[in-house]
Every structure is written in structure tokens, then in C-alpha cells.
Length: 141
Image 1: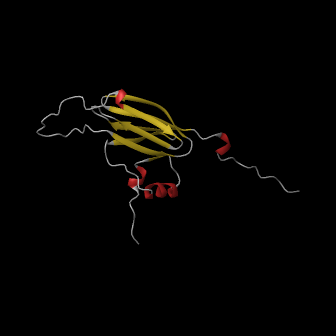
Image 2: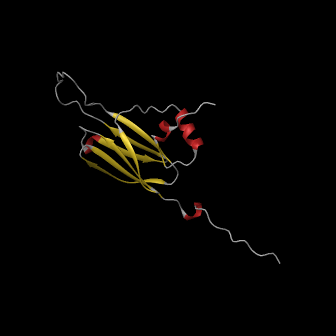
Image 3: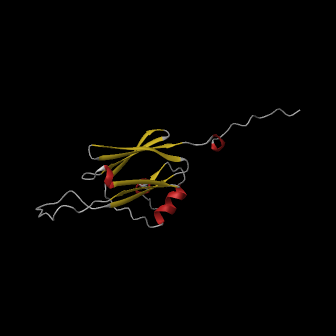
């Protein structure tokens, strides 16, 4: 029996507890390349933080959109400077679009930029009606 490494599935899904949803999203042909690099951090049981390396991008060059269960981060870089003659170019200066699939009840609470990193904070807020509840067992008479 062969083992499957599911690590790549967890890189673009936040807060999922259902493996079937992860498999379905991975099979849909997501176009996430590897740029820009990012981390997904578990802050507490219901809090997450995505940190993306966006060196060279200003706040006004970035758009963050949350719609239904998808978080989309876009970076657009205007080519204002004349073409440079690089001997080596290790810093990518191209636009990007990165999508993250969010689980039910995961909401974006804020975004911040510090030292070339874009931090996006998320929280899972499960409504009381969706939380498990204990059922008391009565006594038969």
C-alpha cells in the first residue's frame, strides 16, 4: 500500500477539518505556483495568520479580497522605471494572484504590513447553533 503525502494540500487551506474538501480543491487544478512565498501559522485553536513575503510591493500595490470561502491576495507592480540591466535578479518584480480556500466560519479580521511581510489574520467563529451540545439522558420510569 503506497502512502500519500498530503502536506501540499494543507498549504492553501485554512481551518479545514474535512479531508474530502481538501482533495476536491486540490483536484480542481489550482494555479498556485510558489510565488510569493508564505507561511500559515496557527496562533491558537481558532486563530490563524498568513504571512507573505511581498518585498518591493507597497500597500497600494496589494489587494486583499475575501468572498464566500476564498481569500484572494493580488499584487500588481507598475513598470514605471526604465528597464534595468541586471547581472543577477533574485528578487521577483512581477505581479501575482494567490488564492486560499477557507473553511466554513473562517473570517479575515485584519491585514498589516511590516518589514516586507504582509500579515493576514484570520479567526474561526463557529456559531452556537453549529457547536456540539451535550444531551442529558433521562431516567425511564
